[in-house]
Length: 318
Image (tube, rainbow, N blue to C red; front, side, top):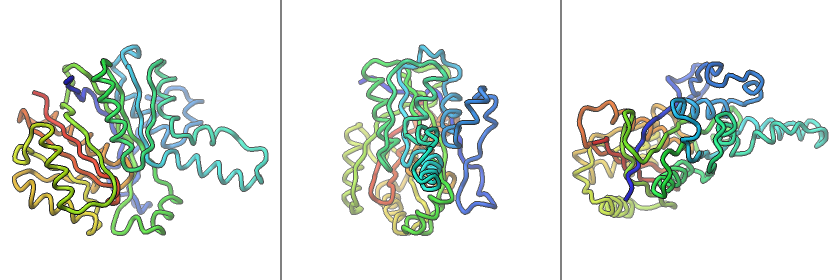
């Protein structure tokens, strides 16, 4: 089967907890040097600027004709623009509505903007599958590579607003959990290059609440299907978020299935959001690229509120 390599990565994420916000806000770059069109930049909301800038950073060294597909993912989409449009409906009593917030509230805006700015006339898809949005995009990207594409841009992004934070709190989704936001992009390729960081081996997803035993069986089957044993996993990366009930499964797997692996977490850095697993892949790919030990294998296991589960296998390039 055709190997899939992570050749470039880019991320916009938080550096530290903000004093003014109860959640982790992304540390945004100076967009002027990335999105040079000032008029276009002014019309973009935060998440669109984050996503577009992150995507452009990931492919800035690649000619536009070499990008065979753009695949994006988001769990909640452009919240700020959605809120703005809904507020305008109420304030204007459904009359004389500005269409711009509505147009920019659609989930595929970021992928479309990257294509327009970089003049990429290729496959363009957006996945909105709650806590499995990024994994769905990643699977699509891997299939595109294995079907013949040379370079595929895959990215994920989610934002948090004061209103969405309050709503999630009222719904009980953030008990002992710090919310976050961010954007991560990956350039997947079929060939190893000078900048290749790691090999993306496999991705698997499943849904609904499961017992520790059931999840253990699924992980065993996932590893066996990739000719691996638990003892061969060097890094076990988990989505611990601070909630004792949600973290219990991670701790159980660490103790029973991967007692020899190095344990790594990521939501303490980026916060909890539907596509936070993209930050885990960014973190692991970056670490593997910097590691001197060849052949190391990392398994990322994440679940979003115990409903959406994903397994991602990554190996350092040989």
